Image 1 (cartoon, rainbow, N blue to C red):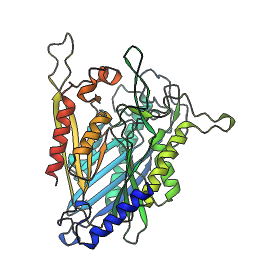
Image 2 (image 1 turned 30 degrees about the vertical axis):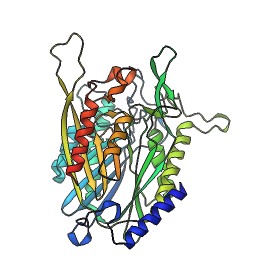
Image 3 (image 1 turned 120 degrees about the horizontal axis):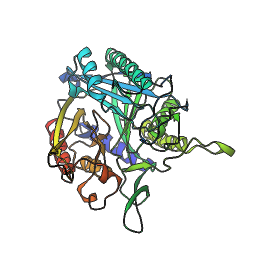
Image 4 (image 1 turned 90 degrees about the vertical axis):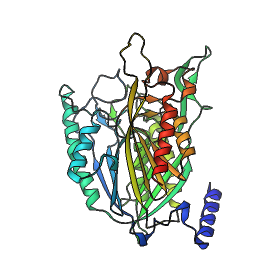
Length: 428
């Protein structure tokens, strides 16, 4: 890994010596064009202060009984050339039915367009279940109302704090996530561990620093479910991704915020999955913490090796609601032929983001990355809505949980990839 980073750094130095824009950076992304990059950050504690119904497992009916680690919302506001982009990372299952009311409130207060904000959750299954429904569990409704107010305040703080930054990007890899579609002797697929199945091991890390070089943020993206803890766990936790972000912040210091995003992980679980609790007997290291630290240390390694940064970057973004083919329902001739899916694409200089409002299976995310016209592409699941699982076409013959659960027809993933790549090309 170190050799790869050295070679990459050397190649960048040679490119700079020739006067060629870094990473395909277009001439328009120059300080002279007015695209000076600015960023502001805000970190909020969003841990519930009352027992709540927890998310992710429909069979878990009990309230939470305590807090293992505190939950955070980490907000990054970018500005350049008169354009803005707000990334909201939260230690939550995601913004499902709460997406539109919270998005609309933020956009109205700060004159943002819907395509200029990415509301994301790390998909932890050990957090509160957000709801604004009148018949929702009272503590959860109260929690979500407070959450809405906190996010409104946090986005304002981040926007107000925007100031010039240097931005860099790096790539690492981690074995924390593993394909969970385990084939049984009879050919059926169950949720388990399939170490030979497709898995996106890539860890993308964006570094933000002040003009004097002082680091302020380490944004990172990795594909895994937040399911190292199972339905028997009643302790509030950010699970693997939240614990990784906490570790990064601990190591890089109190002045650095680590917004984390869940990649295309619909069929990817942590290596240790659905555990009943944080085991600590006889000096045992709890598996969620072990995996979080393992991922967090890779983020820090990549972050420390990002040497080349830029002070200018153009910003552009677009939100589209795709009407994708819906899976036919037996006995329901009146079922809608399509199912909506929110897709948000954005660029910050030569870094792309594709936010998808569903549980995107890893093969689909990897295909988007491979076809992207940008060298670095953050694929972010659980972003701007909820539409369930979206598998690639070839898995429908195998069946399994994700296939049985999806509301999309087999052709949907191919259309999503095509439209995402078209939208990314339009941002160039």
